[in-house]
Image (cartoon, rainbow, N blue to C red; front, side):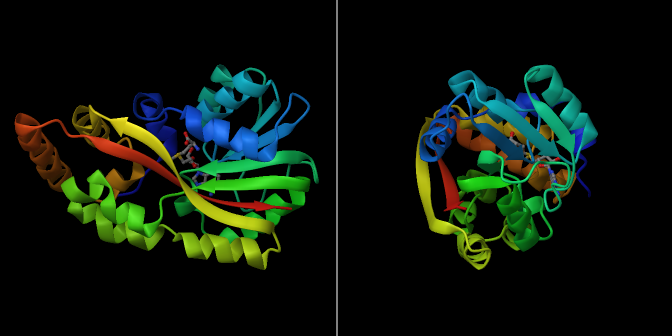
Length: 244
Ligand SMILES: C[S@@+](CC[C@H](N)C(=O)[O-])C[C@H]1O[C@@H](n2cnc3c(N)ncnc32)[C@H](O)[C@@H]1O
């Protein structure tokens, strides 16, 4: 089954929100001020950009391939510039301009990661920062989605680049100060109900990779566990970072 963000944009904000700790980390790492230009590649409906702007008053830009998604982002962030493009091209963006370029939960959709990082390097300012948030293979194996929807595990491992691949691609594009790490984002005590909602709406693209029956079985497993104990999730975010 394929996954279409132009269709999913209607329920997108029911299942995704920006995380304050992630934004604070990026803003601090890149030293963002109100003079800075900040770009999110694969920006979705602009939840992260809105929070970046609220925190810093910086100039925000978003690129996404989906026109439906971009129209939602424009409604939400009237101060932003939004451009439809593929992440690997970034053709209509100015060279050597951005203090921070970031990607959250996007890199597994990208066909040519080396070319994407090369394009991002072209538009970063000297000393500008690229930060990519994406689940490592270890993280994917330990996610509750892999426990309750085990059919997602193999295709997820196949489509997600592991941290070492992202790090190597940054190094081969001659990014400096390359590092990776994990942010601890706290516990979600009510994750069972949330995951049922996301799975039922096919709100994450992984639910486009498995059948309706497999989703229903996973929902039943969560409900069974919730009869006995709360389904709690320790939220973490894995990142890689490099400087131009
Ligand atoms: C899981 S969403 C994440 C959106 C946003 N970063 C967030 O965390 O809310 C992935 C987004 O990447 C976009 N996307 C997927 N492949 C892309 C590509 N090759 N170029 C640009 N955007 C892409 C999708 O349209 C979608 O909006």
